Length: 69
Image (tube, rainbow, N blue to C red; front, side):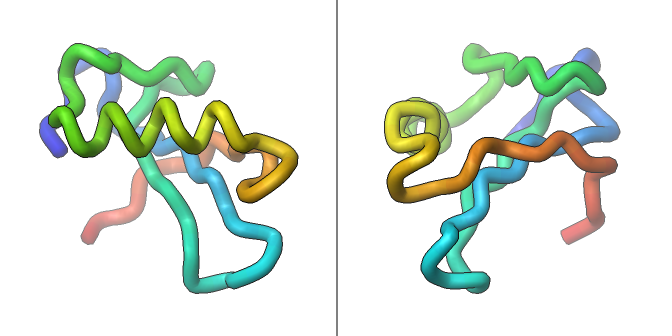
């Protein structure tokens, strides 16, 4: 994923309450805002899915400093 300059330094993490190995992570700003225009189509679909299933299939998201991959 390519992040816009406004979305560097932080990531929004949606964890699965069922599996510690399953999570969705997106670049965001310090307030947790994701620049959807900077996401690929697949990442945007995953982001919208994670938002739609918050509290059911994924926990409410956390904003954290970005980790290098």
